[in-house]
Image (tube, rainbow, N blue to C red; front, side, top):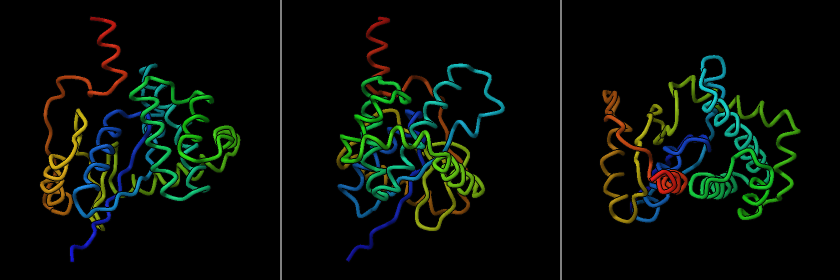
Length: 213
């Protein structure tokens, strides 16, 4: 009997790279014995005092709004609710280009995830959602995480990545996992990185490219 591996992915809904890594792991679950849990990481908190790019600040601020709704979703329905809502948020924001901090979008995503749409407004008005978010963020940051996507396999140290630029499905997703899993638990492994040559292949960037020609 094959043991099921517990994998945690830390995400911020504003990050397109974390979105694609999460979709890869969702595919891996279909072809390999792993169980994925979605946890939160706040890019707004990382960059609050240092980011001078107005676009980045707006994006990270919107991500923080959505993160607080994810906290409220977990309170209402546990880890499964977080995974369902993150999927709906990602499809709305990254694939269809809807803003993350729009109350209407957040309510629709909650409804699609089988949750109370009123959580969108309640999360923003309840300061404890931010307290819980920052506590979760700081806990993984203290273990060495500095961005997203961050993966933790079992009790191993957090690892940034892998970063992928397109949706990987089926056995190709499983084969990538076979190679990544060893690295995630190898203490002497430090870093691999390539030059980033293009934007992630997600709907909102593809739509923008079509408009700009």
